[in-house]
Length: 235
Image (tube, rainbow, N blue to C red; front, side, top):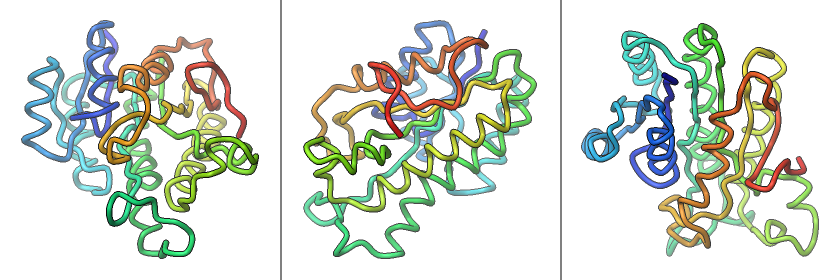
């Protein structure tokens, strides 16, 4: 049975991804930094709770030991993320963004993903078919953000797209370093979740589609790519 860890899985896209993969036969470790919400979500889904704060080294080490003691890991889904909106749920634009805000966003979206991936690499390397899915964003695409007329072009924020572009680069470099793994970045689409103050235009069921699909790629599947539900995206 495939063992899968999903970070930030007590709600939103992570929760829906867990639900779908459990239905597909995966043993899902539901990563949550909030114990109460995590217990509730794991119980509802039939998942195994792993208390996991991706910004904390000790928390990540403890999560590795918990999964190791339970048998190992085949799939890692780096889903935990923040957008970091300001007052009245407003996107923080170039005039107002600060280094502190950039640091806070990168701590979860970039450093957190690297922290978790680095810590779980030994377990993934023992798997017969290791897979890593990094949840990125359409706002990570430099091609889209520099093309007038695209929805992404009009987005005024700085920290979030910068962090997700970094996630894409991490994906590419890890994929080259570990050719036996399938490591890809995915764009779920503008999904209605707490991350964006529920301003998204599609459901979590729609958003989770590409995450679930890429979590189940076989050894001959793509790696080092950037995909949405319709196929490869421009970097």
